[in-house]
Image (cartoon, rainbow, N blue to C red):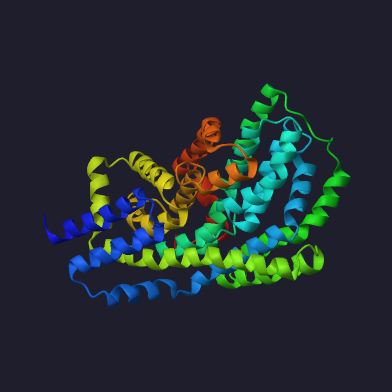
Length: 435
């Protein structure tokens, strides 16, 4: 074997061996990169330089701002108001609390951009309520976890920002718009399945629909929902960049939490900042080490190797997209979402673009794939949070999750093979000049 082939085996083999041994993902990426660099005889100082360069990106500043904004809105009373609004909209349907859960996730996820934050925040309120009204605890937990994936798609999403950074020359605004329809489709699909199950199991209805109550709850919730409007409209219209819109969102979230809803204290603010910094530290370490990993993949011509390998199996566009989905679904079961975006995008995106898939379309496909991974063992972060919040063992949850997986994969295949569902809104509101 030549030097490059051996280096690929060292890089990829060491990485997966350390993942299997349950090393922290950032350490697995960093150590495998250092060993490969040493084998190739490249200066180790270059590793440090590339790591610094990886985090010295202006657009990356949007990530900490979005994380802080999500924490602020989650702790500032927005959860209760979104639940009330959702109840006014869909609570009157059979299995109303399940519908409320899904719609609330649609709203809250669009503010927090985090599946785990959504599950932790809304789950602590809605899962006990659903159990008290006679819903099975596994069903209540599964609805909460699966609907939280909408938050990864519906903007603002810091994962979309990270994908845009790694993919290069991809508009964050177009990515934000591309997430709307898949996120809403996922919510509708989950509501249809939940309704069928509610009728079968005779789950209760909520209070009758009331226009007056809808207007009242909407007026109370509008301040929180303005966060999404500010961010999305600001980026889409080009008035501000993604980073600037994220900073504005933080300022707005502080105003709403402290002066309008008045449910956040200075003491809670410090705890909130500690959580945000902890999350940010993990993200930045991942980004810096993944930058080196990605640089080595490019240096060793790994993307070209993967493209040639997959195209060698088949030249059918639909079969290739199916293969890419399977790869991402498998990766999602063993790796953290951020790490997959940072490591897998440079490898898989060239395959997708080689068969005419728009990078924006592929971004939506990847985010939904990895969202499914968050509720899949053994690594699924949202699965662990859902189990902790509800007290239901993971083994029981996984068994009852299978129908939900089927629904989510059906939506995934739909947005994969009907690109217009994803690209319609970006092409309408932010058309690419010359296309």
